[in-house]
Amino acid sequence: MKVVWNLKSNEEMGNVHKKAESQFPIVMDQENLESTAALFKGLADETRLKIISLLWMEDLCMCEIVAALNGANSTISHHLKIMEKGKVIESRREGKFTIYCVDKEKLAPLMPYLKGND
Image (cartoon, rainbow, N blue to C red):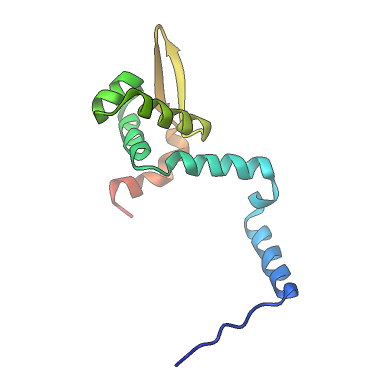
């Protein structure tokens, strides 16, 4: 049985758009939209997810993360910057070290996916 797609009119699409805006009001506010996109970008990489799992256990400096992942300093630094921009992680100075920590409150709802309990 072949089904034919019926293209929606501009008026119908206007209604779909209004419903989407009411269900997802963030799309109306450019600043919130950008920060939400940055959050998802901060999560959207295998290495970043590994970093999150390490930082979930405890706060670490970059050299400790590099050692744990056996990665290059420049690569890990790049990922950390993206994650900070997305407010997935925060950093603080302690002497000559920059210490990174994960925002557990923000990420707690996502942790079952990393644990494989989805």
